[in-house]
Image (cartoon, rainbow, N blue to C red; front, side):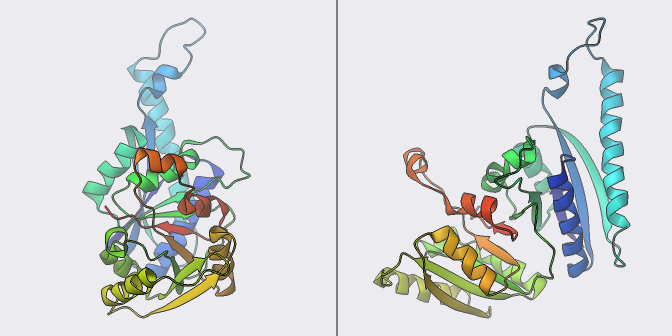
Length: 282
């Protein structure tokens, strides 16, 4: 049975992502959801003491942990009541560093996908998951699907892979890509957006030939378009072709490169109205 890991912080954004994950699991079939809430290390130390200035003891901490478990079970009950196709939903409560705990769970639960919600550019909520979207994607040992707050679920049939045809072999985890496409039996469009008036370079054609070889057993098509803004070009094409998911390939940068680089992946996660799969080479 396949597993989807869904970290939640009980915000509207996280609840929406959990509902999307449920619909995705229903499409896949034979798939379970694991709802994970992480209590950050030191959380209880930051809570103000009671009126008589006594610090929280073990009983108080256990009581608050029980409250978190009740919230997880309430979310589980709401999810299991949705739709005719029943999905197994499990819960987990852990304490520690959010990013480290997610990867610990990844290692022993082996989910094929982690789904988190994005607060979106206009959402004022100050929640851990929304603020850590990119950090989770950069550190997760499993592919991360970021679900915008206004994304409506549609069965996955077409996927757009945004690609600049640079260092193809190094940045594309081809096995994960093929596995994702196979699970949904989805069609793949490989999209390259170039600045207006710029002709494809010879290196692009060489990388395209390499990608053809890597995807020899996957049905795919290449799409080339021009736009003055790369992110907007990706979003425009994805809308016009009615894709359900955009795949972005986060790159690793040195410290100085990261200062100067304006990440397309980051922009997509906060500006797209479609879920964005951040597929990182591990």
